[in-house]
Amino acid sequence: MKTAVGASGGDFPEWIVNRLTELTGASHSEVIGALLVANHDPKQAIEILKEMGYEAQGEWQEMEITAAMVKQLRDETDAPMMECKVALTEAGGDMTKAKALLREKGKAAAAKRADRTTAAGVVAMSTSADGKTVGAVVLESETDFVSKNPEFVAIAQKIADIFLANDPGSDPTSVAGVKDLAESGVALFRENVRVAKAVRITSANSIATYVHHDNTKGSIITFSAGDGSDEAVRKVAVHATAFPPEVIRKDQLSQDRLNAELAIEKQRALNEGKAEQMAENIAKGRVNKEFVKSAVLLEQPFYMDTARSVSQYLEQEGKGATIDGFVYLAVGQN
Image (cartoon, rainbow, N blue to C red; front, top):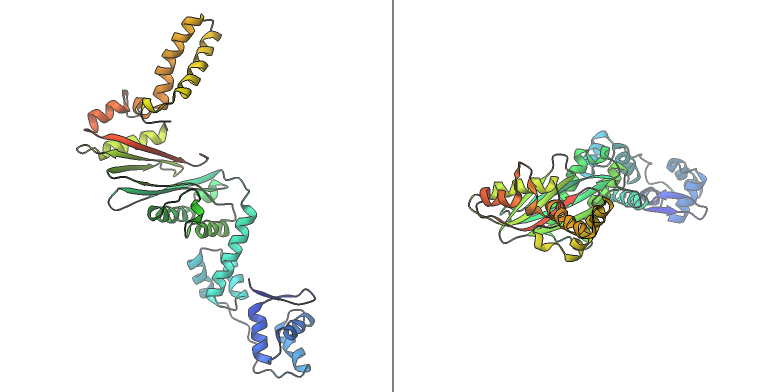
């Protein structure tokens, strides 16, 4: 809020000082002095200025803040009703100035809450008309009471729409409009609201997406389509959301990652009393049967038919579809 500050510590909305200056012709400093003596009462300040030799060119009129004005500001900013009324009062009924005041208050609230832990949130995605670009965001809040609010979900969707058109890069909040939307969430809900993760995925081929019904997790899969394979890959996106893999194919697992698992399983076998050589063989079998089938998407048992792997399901139902890329998004992921 723009204010005028007196030498003795008075702090007054600028519009009040400007209006009194217009009415009396007194300087800003004289008006502020009169307001201090009048205990912030504009009408009494005018009387004091008259005693100082100034003539009032009219009477002080209190700005009437109507319910319709408050509702309009609420509809346009999503700020709480009482804060809208206060902002309009401070702005002298000027809607533009009131919006600016609310933005400033939102930024101040965001700064105060920035260090608070965000344990809840939603995943939102936005897909282009041709289905070849997706913008997605994980927007987090402190509580699920806030994250389940339709207005919070709407803010997340607006941010996803922004990332559909703009790459979030390494600093998503630097993208035009994103920081303002997050701060509007702070102002509205009085909780820390942060962009935890954001991506923009493009593909020359096809993209399948899925967001879980509770909006807390989702997957994006890029793929080379087979004949009528879109629905089959969408089901794989559902599967990957429920059982997020580390990689798509076995050959994408690093040797260091495999060696670490082999060491863990060998020690497990030794702890079970197995001999050294036998422990090594058991470790290899367990890594292939347990770890690989958990960490590799195409090796996982498909959730709709666990007798088939995801790879087998795609071969039979996907009609030639090949998965090229995979992104998993979830609240609390980072």
